[in-house]
Image 1 (tube, helix red, strand yellow):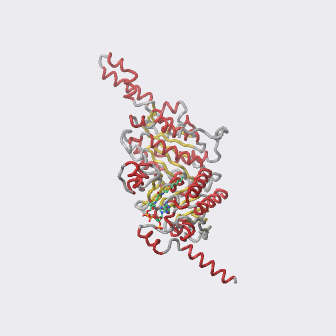
Image 2 (cartoon, protein in one colour):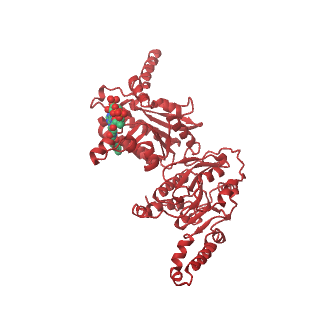
Image 3 (cartoon, rainbow, N blue to C red):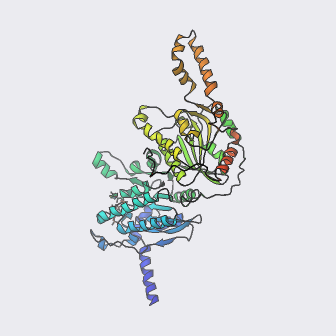
Length: 517
Ligand code: HXC
């Protein structure tokens, strides 16, 4: 009897494991995509996958569903390990009715999320889906709603990661949007609310999959996607790398990793960089790599708002989030997109106990009608708000320029940074000398016997008085003016003190703040 039942189990499991069957699997491969279970194998530590709900099927019968065998209802769900730590993973199976989401499919994902939230570990969604399964009507909308609600409930408690690995339309893109990080793969990943055909019918605009919602558009233009990979294998490797920087939940500290890199290592490159003209552009990633353990840095949203660089690294083994103005793009100024990018990153770090190291070289906010009409007042304030709210340890280094409101925003002591350093080359002022003198002395200049000499003298006085770190250090806004070559040592030491216990008070109790969204 047991033998017969075991055989039946094998038969049922075999059928479910076959997904959409050989023909659909072949089509999936022809599109250059891996199968759902292959994806899970690439992602997880070998042999750790425990599938849940293999035999789940839809109870829906309308519009031809009765005749269809939908293996696992189009999604593979289960638990496994990454770098030895538990995760929950689901992979939508495009070979089964386009990976579309019906009630049973949604319930599998919701149950998995409940489990991950209850046991406190990350959820990774591998998405490849045509969206709401039309045949299941409001059940599929309801199913989506249940997932969205869980995304919100899990936000800030456990890391949530989405990889878009096919054409994801309609409901299939809202859930990823609610998660912390989105990955896409060039050539196979597409995300849109409505596809090119609907767009053309509704607006007359002619477009295609790639230019409407491909990996490069979302990685560079919309900012929806944080990591663009050239292949699925690279995507899974990067997800594993990202997780190596994250705690399993907000009650943990991020994974410490013993480093062989000398915490007191000095850098001649930084001395050299400091000695260059402050108006000469340079790539701030150079500074990050010079100070991070082993020069390792995992950058998020690399091509979106490149005037601000954000990402993860380690300093003497402790995970940190780097936020840095990048003078090689728009002179490192802040604007709407950079503020949004930075704010989201700072808030993520704060939620998951990741200290923030801010490297400042900012001439101010990017001026212009487009910025003003685009709401830079609202969006620019997001980054300030995020810094102000963050209670994780915050260490700031002003490298060269820190002008105007951007000085305050970029992790200044006034918005709650714990330790503030500056290179001796720093220029900390309301505005540049030329602009300031024009405003302060325009009348005097016009009346002066030698206006040019008068102007030069005033500019030099202003520079001497304001365009340096000394005034700020004298007032205690800068804790120490440091030798550029010793930046790593200084930041490491500061963090080691701060990480012994967060001395900052948590925010006063309230329902929640009203971040300017
Ligand atoms: C039911 C669907 C489906 C859907 C695709 N299929 N989308 N079935 N509901 N939404 C089925 C197809 O009929 C086909 O079935 C199989 O999935 C594969 O689809 P193909 O079209 O053959 O594949 P491909 O040419 O690669 O195109 C993939 C696609 C396209 C780009 C995803 O199918 C498409 O545009 N689908 C509609 C996407 C969409 O508009 N979704 C939004 C739904 S509304 P067979 O039997 O041949 O294998 C929504 C709102 C939710 O999601 C809001 C929540 C708040």
